[in-house]
Amino acid sequence: MLKKSFFGLSRPQIEYELLPARIPEPDRVVPSKKVTLFHSKNGNQNAPISFQAGDKVKTGQKISLFADDPTYVISSVTGTISSISPHLGDFGKTYNAITISIDDNEELDDQFKKQVQNPDLAGAIDYLSFLPGNPNLSALSDPETKIHTIVITGADSDLLIGTNQSIIISRLDAIKKGIAILRDISGIENIILITAGESMQGYGHIGARVKNIGTGYPAALPQLIMKNVLGEVVPAGKTCTEQGVCFLTAEAAASIGTAFGDGQIPVRKTLTLVTKDGNQRLIETVIGTPIRDILDSYGVTLNEEDRIIFGGPMVGTAVYSLDHPVLPDTDGIVVIDRSDAAYASDYPCINCGDCVRACPAQIQVHMLVRFLEAGQYEEAADNYDLFSCIECGLCSFVCVSKIPIFQYIRLAKYELGRAEASAAMEETTAAEETTETTEGTEATDA
Ligand code: SF4
Ligand code: SF4
Image (cartoon, rainbow, N blue to C red; front, side, top):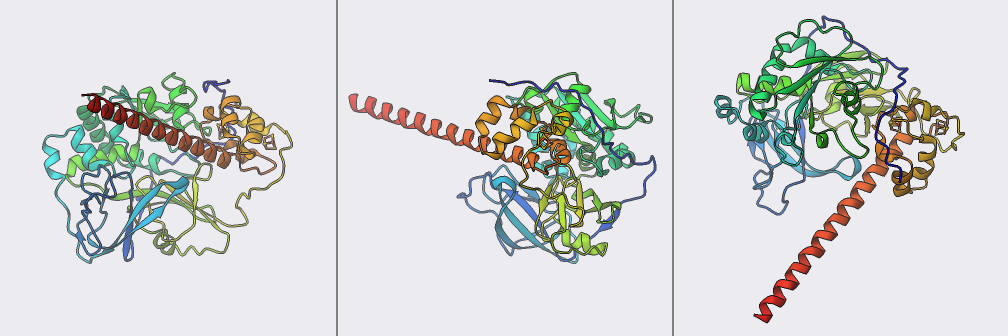
């Protein structure tokens, strides 16, 4: 079994684009009539429901759909819930889509205000997990992960996206406050701020060690930051969190700072919009704004087979409805004309080796892809390092046969994860049944 750790030599040929030191304010895009918030379906769906259509909500109000449900969304507007419906996301993730019709008059919810006087981690997890930047605050309290380092990334991980770079340029005070709060509530001293490009001036009093990464793609992916900045290799199949390192975006850190500074939960998301002509714009809109409203603001029209990508061009995911809302982690929206879209093909691999040369994890991608195409995921994992993949998308980008290698990789990881979860569940059920039988026998004997 080959379970090689990731230690590859990166040979980047594509450069991240750096923003200038001075940038204009982001454009404000206001949702026209409604917003939609995706509430994850992790809680007990049979518990009594706490919100329903017709209920009024305020801006910044926490909405947890079921009693005792630890998951929640934060209303980004003031209005009336008009519908709650199931939504199927990528790779079978299920959500309740909560649509809110916007009122003319905004009212701010003040529940978070009481947290500001005595900040603590439980309160932050309770109110700030749906912040712009989607911070994984729960990881900080998970006894299994034992986080010892927080990495705040001011470098955007995909190409053409400048969202977190812009936050570093424009909201340094909020980031500084966020870092102080994070240190205070987590007790973690080792906090590192990652910046893109050469400039490290002006960060002297930020309260974190500042480290710069190179501009060659994919230097801003967490596994490469772990290796190049922290000098730690993430073993195949493990996450950075499992290695004790929690990654947060600069926007998440700034949002935490703003939340504790103002006593209000921020609901405005900064993102980079890339239109079909290649123009990049920084925009600010509330979480839940439908893409339609953003495209309408810029007069962007879509023709059949044009594509909308959430994230960035290398590792983003396509969305198929103009009603799809901006999510807390939507750093970029890329609109691609059908003539520029990279189409997948069913041509066979010609063994050119370009994918192997491009792969920063030094995976034998040309061999891996043969097993993935055949649906032999376990063999791909055991023999060809599926879990060493750091998901940069370079193999798909360079493949002359246009094989959707990256999509195959994501699907294989998802399917193996599902199989593992289902095996674990069967094991738990079997163990519970054995316990019940034993208890029953003991009771009868007694
Ligand atoms: S996405 Fe492709 S190129 Fe990138 S690490 Fe994975 S296998 Fe290698
Ligand atoms: S780049 Fe594509 S065609 Fe070339 S070896 Fe890799 S999978 Fe095969």
